[in-house]
Length: 386
Length: 202
Image 1: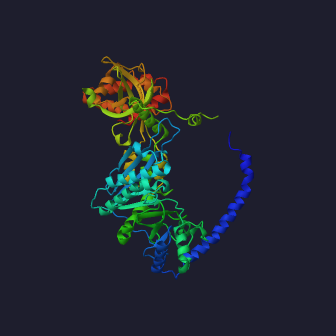
Image 2: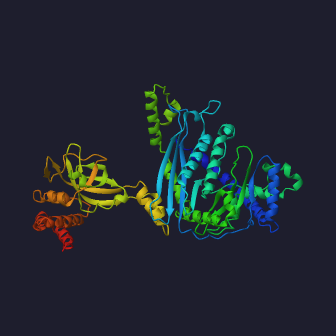
Image 3: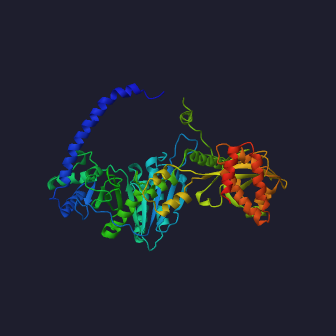
């Protein structure tokens, strides 16, 4: 049976009216937020001090903190280095599923290494890992879920990048999709703590090699700047009682806020990502927003990188220009080409999923292990509908 | 022994008795050319010969997006040509087969199978195949519909003419032209198309 379209249709006018009202309210908030953001009285050092005090006082805090540049900074696109190596990794996974005959997890990492200026075809690789059996279950015996699998996958991505990033004279930039740091699943955070530690070690190693690692966030929805401005409005005496859930202006993303500020190719000021609380990141991350468009409609992406990079303006410029040009290879829908290719390499199709499962079933049978049954629910879902 | 000197140009995607389609990667697209004689050797020793009638470069949505870009750095072009799994399709028209050391200008008794290897024939084999009988394989090409028959023939004859000339058989090409005139005597338009195309070789 198809969707009952008449039922949906009769709800549409009211829905559209509410959406319009919501957008009007957001537009008003947008203006209000922009006034706060563009306030000439804001001093970078004073803002840093206040956010730092809030960090010390509050158990949970998730916002931006200016580093050095003024809030209204617009940096034009720097020149692209004549030669550099860009390595991107992206992962795909088979999440264990109790409805299948056997439970297993596969992590598939696509890796591409582009040596710009060489004229050569990039190196590509696919790294597939069958997750160790002992990692399949949580301490209380449940199968691990999406969040844990994502953590394992993120770690594998970063291991692959480290492996591929051999020190050389030319700059090396590594790129992953999404935030640079990995975030813990709160329910298994104790058991998975080592993953964050491993990721930290990898980043320390990359730093020692002088490798610029970056995370690319497409269509960012976070409100780090809005949260920052909200904290800055709180009187000093009340800072310890700040509650982000009572934030007045919400729903305006950083990308929306900066959309009219940044022209094509320009980046924003560099900010520090303040992430304090359970399951939050432990890596010190900085970021800027970048208008990855050729003009016309702004298209802002967030670029995250390790804090140490900010101390070297030349390296920030390198990230700025490399990532912009990489995304503009796909200029009708800008997104880093290398990340798209890494994703393309990593994707596990359903036939591949079933093939791995069949391989595992054969092996289990040979080993004399029991093989379960596919659930009736899963089996029936596979029926061809009319 | 001779097999090892042949150039592998692709592997079969699909086939029937009249022709087949082989796939190869773009980076391997150096040897195959329109009108070239190629063959597939089956496990039972049957060798199926064909002429390349069309080479298709496939695209996908990423390539289409890249095409719309102003400039693509070399490394990205190379990535799409060398790394991405977009096979070039080589359409081959069957023109004969070999069995037990003999060559026949008839359609093969059965088609090759998917993933069979497609090899380009060298000049020696080209001469051997085209010297057999009296140009009997021309009829397979002449009856093709919706194909640039005269272009396939011209490309083939140019190469075969050169190979025969190197063996001191300059008369082979003259005989081929006479045979085409005979075969197309009732098709004036077709004959003129072929002769006009062959005039390009002079």
